[in-house]
Amino acid sequence: MTPNIPEIVAEIAEIFERYEQALIDRDVDTLDAIFWNSPHTIRLSVREHGYGFAAIHAHRLAAKAGAGGIKQGRVRLDILTLGRDFATVNLTFKTNDPAAIGRQSQAWVRFPDIGWKVVSAHVSVVDASTLALA
Image (cartoon, rainbow, N blue to C red; front, top):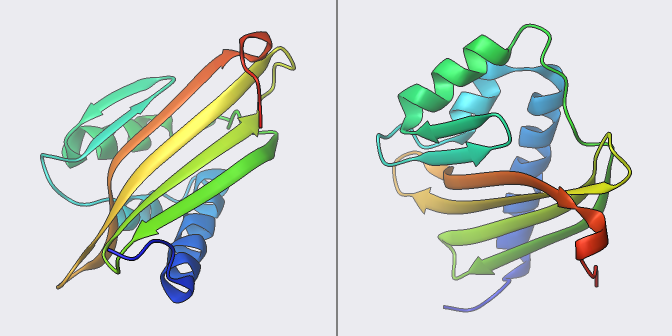
């Protein structure tokens, strides 16, 4: 499993940026298309414990109207690919609260028939004073 094959990193980076824009735009169709449609998919976030695609989708529909984002700027983005079919994305970001820092992680798998999908995701916010950012 060769780490960070440049063209695979580029593929994940492009899809990740599409995902981030869909969050800003509240584009539920794009958000759903990026996640694996499976009862095994998990998304844990500040306002959600989504166990299974159906729960994740239901949360997105409920949050679609008026739910603002918490991201106010990137601190660090790390993409790791292993081989051609597995990747992780980790983002550290500034939040609405200058005393807090946000963290986002995703596990991606390339499926033969449906392409790259997020199979697991997590978003949390912590007190920035407790972290040393490298």
